[in-house]
Length: 436
Image 1 (tube, rainbow, N blue to C red):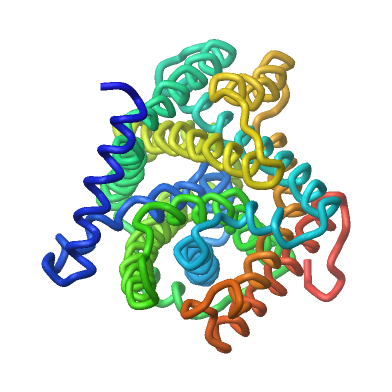
Image 2 (image 1 turned 180 degrees about the vertical axis):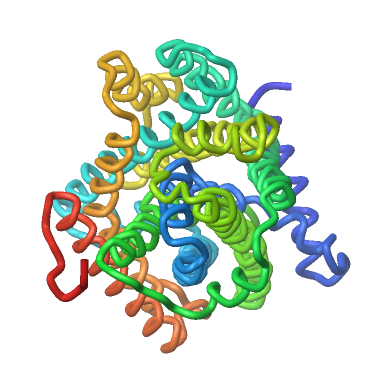
């Protein structure tokens, strides 16, 4: 059976099951199964190697105090990803396509250029994370680890030729594997659950350093490519035939977003409280990068815990790099109407990582720079998303309620403000309104 027929067969099977769920013939978890996939794919962006670095640094330096920031960031991401999924369901188009249709050509072209830069910056961070995981776990030289990462991600991407389901299952499995790794780390690190419960909901900002770390956690949480990609994954999955079906499909989609983003949020919490329980509690308050975390974890909890940590990092890097490449294809096709072969995009997006590794550039510093680039681009998809989802002539029965628009606008203002502060601090700025 050729690729096109396999893809169509996968689509037909999912659509048939989805129609049965909409009609009420499938109940409980069986009804939700056909709609599972898009949110789990995009949730990988929230547990990528960049999150490892910020969460570990926050936990090692400030213990459990910064857990509330993870909760806040995850709630904002949940809202925006749900809006993106709804956009695809309501319109049958993804966010870049709508930008091309409704915005001036010059603005659409500018958004495409910046979005491609953001996609490459994202892939750089994710690629480096997987490369570092291979290097530390198996002792493979960085340059060879980079090549192996490229091959692994390309092979996973090829699964899309067999339909969207096989690729979704692999990525969802890697997300679950990351979650299981941190479940193991939770048992090994023995965190204080009373402290976790308290600091997950009680805000705390002690000084300038803690504030800047909070900015880093929130400002780098919502990924531009994840917002673009989610609308693409839902636009043709199960095409609604009337307004009633739109509402039901959106209801299933919202449940999936809650499940997937909750898993991502729990993993981020686990990253931070593990660092608090292991590093901060033992006086290692300056663990600020992945390599140091691995080297410090080994004598404190043993080689097994360190290996589990690296398995989660490797899974995160590979899966998030796959998702980043998928998003890059959506961005190009949507904004400018053409695509390039998958292998060519994989080669182009991995070249910066190869150059950085070959030159021996500090991976942690590179991750910081990539986050700055993402911070500059992030306002574009957020503002476009709010603009389209509030328009009844575009969204129909799935138009944002007023409170959704208000909440998303508050999120956008907060994220943009924090990203500006993050960029300002990265380039040496100081915040005099906070103590040292």
